[in-house]
Length: 87
Ligand code: SF4
Ligand code: SF4
Image (tube, rainbow, N blue to C red):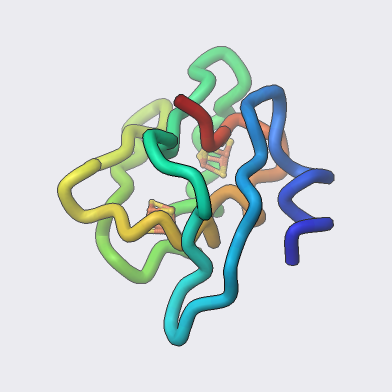
């Protein structure tokens, strides 16, 4: 799975992951999901991937941090690299 993150994530720090029971969590702390607005085309693929109602796409994607479980499924679904996981 880490290989997929390295392919997709631009240009933020790609966390080392440890396999969890339901989610892969980053090993190091302080990172969070961010949107690079100028790369977002509003396709909503991320929204369809998120199982935690943590994204809103109205023109561009926004992250609802209080709902986000850091599973990063959305990041792997974004075709433009608009989602990054970094500090
Ligand atoms: S990291 Fe997971 S929970 Fe957070 S917005 Fe992406 S898909 Fe949803
Ligand atoms: S998948 Fe990527 S480009 Fe599409 S709405 Fe989500 S963040 Fe934007």
